[in-house]
Image: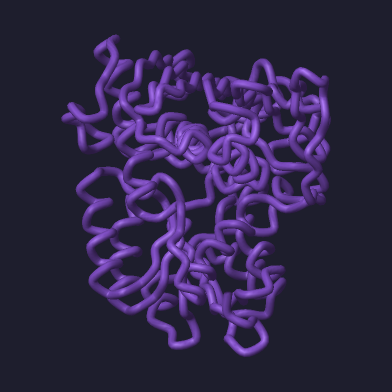
Length: 398
């Protein structure tokens, strides 16, 4: 590892000041090997909030930020349809890249992004997903080392209000990467793949659109069969009924204490007059400086209830670490609290750029996650198991 006292920190610009970009800003500000260098967003109010808060430039054009000499790397948190354009431009300008999930809307676009990164000798990390969370990485360490015997299966459950948070039009159109299949499923697939450390062999899935007013998939059940023989079951619903944070002692996915608010997001959306009101609410509550990201993260992040079953123990994320259920009873592996996976995203980037360490969550990893998501969509459509090797679907709109 390079000496942080002698190697200058990476200067990172943030493209997109919505919820993802807003959440990444504090992680960059607190990171010992990176510094925040500016931002870009088309929304004037979000740019004003950012500049007022950080005293740094915020421009209205992503290409302007990418081209600045004082920017070494960019975090791309723009709508999915712009990931290809912005990543390619960054690579051609010699800028290292963090791009939000999903990596792109097609496998062909992923291939182009990877080729441009290699051609221009830049690092590309894809995240944040909950696959970067500290408990997940510690579970990966335990399962790959055989600390608790052979890994057998992963069971994952998450019930949220996702579908009724304020949305842009394309976020409710599956053919444009909207809905839970390309926004929430990548979290669970990344977590499962990070821990299982094996290629996916096949998937069998069922999905549902339960509210015609939000005409995209809002729930799914997925069974993943890995080449190693490990299996994973993934369940998700975003319909704002049951809240699985109840099973986490009312600690949110970001590690913040919360109160039960069943149905609140749906009622708030139903009270909006039109799409303009919805966009204004999205900016006010979920954009940079909004109330959604307020509060201190004191506990471990999570993505719903997950039990990882090994030969000699079951593992579950607990508020202060990992709960281990073995023949000797329950013990806790303590972990440092208050750190979400975004810090580990930046860690991977800095280690790759400054220390020449190959990242885990690179473009090839993210491409495979998209391929699994496409297979899930196809499996649900055909109501049969889909082999990953035989998958013909290459774009979310097919």
